[in-house]
Amino acid sequence: MAATKEMLNIASVFKPHAACIVPEKREEITTEGGLDVVGQSDRLREICDELANMGSRVSLFIEADEAQIMAAAELGVPVIEIHAGAYSDSNPEDSFAELDKIKNGIKIATNIGLECHVGHGLNYQNVEKIAEVRDVAELNIGHFLIAEAVFSGLGYSIKRMRELIDNARVQQE
Image (cartoon, rainbow, N blue to C red):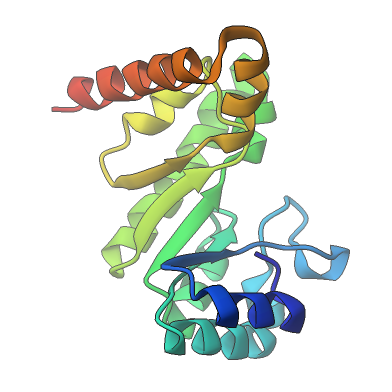
């Protein structure tokens, strides 16, 4: 959800179990696309605190950048979702470097007690390498699954994605 009063008002009615704050406006994002927690910390603190007081488990959609991760931890959120857009959009040669950035961010975050989710641009071709990372608690893949469902049906799309994720997770054991 966007970090706006309008969205907070909606959340106060529905009281979601979990709420992920994502950037909505250009001034809220980093150069890569994740939420700029460092630059927006005062405003985000208010939003995060209000959501937490409603009983929501708050997460922030951020880059795998140490400064952003540390700023998220300082806000007291229990979860971050690492933006996988650069990894998802990269060509095969660059994908390893982007994956390493994500892995490093996950390591930093888990070492300071944050739960890590990863999302944005994940699909059948790139999800396995992310799913292999032991400390990823959740993958967010909604857009691809719905788009793929147009061609293959929702049940099949979800089943295939689940198989890829489960097989990757078995590999890590």
